Amino acid sequence: MTSNSSVLLPTGQAMPILGFGTWNASGKELEVALDAALTAGYRHIDTATAYENECAIGNTLKKWFDSGKLKRSDLFIVTKLPPNGNRAKDVEKWIKKSLANLQISYLDLYLVHVPFAFENGEDLRPHNENGEIRIDIDTDHLQIWSAMEEQVLEKRTKAIGLSNFNIHQIKKILDNAKLPISNLQIELHVNFQQKELIKFCQDNNISITAYSPLGTRGFLKEIGKANTIPNLLENPTVLEIAEKYKKTPAQILLKHIIQKGIIAIPKSSTSTRIKENIQLFDWELRVEDIDKLNAIDMGESGRICDFSFFKGVEKHPEFPF
Ligand SMILES: NC(=O)c1ccc[n+]([C@@H]2O[C@H](COP(=O)([O-])OP(=O)(O)OC[C@H]3O[C@@H](n4cnc5c(N)ncnc54)[C@H](OP(=O)(O)O)[C@@H]3O)[C@@H](O)[C@H]2O)c1
Image (cartoon, rainbow, N blue to C red; front, side, top):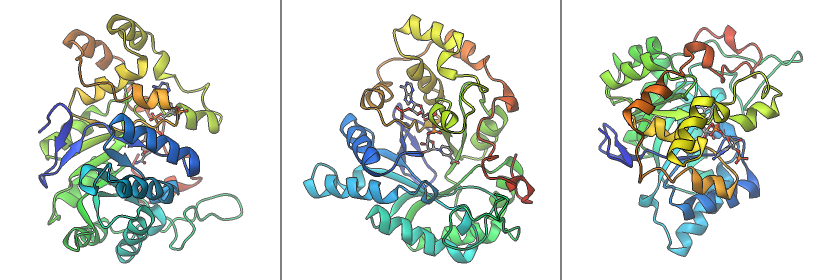
């Protein structure tokens, strides 16, 4: 179920439909950006142990809580179990670390970041001499899910979910879960609309969060792929609709997602864009324009984040794509 500004989870929690993404931001830059985001009205923050930025988020949250401007219950905070902790016996250790870094006593949502696992240890990206990721192929999703459920019972998180899992992997967990899969976080944007996965999640009461909703341009530049992957913000249909509504291309891309009841978590470290990306709640896209945006979908070839930046990860038996 969806209101204009939040999605109701099976746990009864209202998850704000627009969240603040934080991948590829850290330290002072992130503290300033998060300050701007909270000031602009974002109340949902998305992070992950793997982003190595939970401490910066924790520092900013503490400042806001200490000043009395916000209470913990005003926020919806999401973080994720890292791939090197992706085994049942490590779940408790990693969620406790996240809580300590974020300086909070509970999460709103804890996600299994990826279905594959890296070798156990403190190194978030363990790799051998030729740069290949050291994978741990002994991955048991049912045992991991059971350890995730334990975190809810221990009140370390209110809800649990998955990220980057495919339908087959989700089905297996659904068939055995005691607690609901409250959310699935996946790459989703106008070029890659994931229609089959959305239908599956809707049929099974799993809310969806769209990551990289703007096409993750900053990251693509960093890895030298910005010229080989189409820029969603320059798509002619998106530009035409932006012009028609007097909105920015980013606002059109985000509205196209949230108007369908899907949560979006754009990242920005630029204060003007942070404000722009949340100005989505006093206007609507018309059906004919939604249809035009739907038609942009490139299917599987629109996928950007295939984890190929983790060399050799596709050899893991649970590699999802
Ligand atoms: N679960 C997962 O595996 C997974 C994977 C990827 C991402 N995520 C989550 O999803 C979040 C969002 O995805 P993302 O960071 O990959 O990419 P994104 O939000 O699609 O795009 C971020 C990029 O777009 C730029 N940008 C932001 N607002 C803009 C605007 N209004 N106009 C033009 N450019 C704009 C940002 O630049 P500036 O910062 O310079 O403004 C940044 O380079 C992440 O931060 C993370 O929290 C999760």
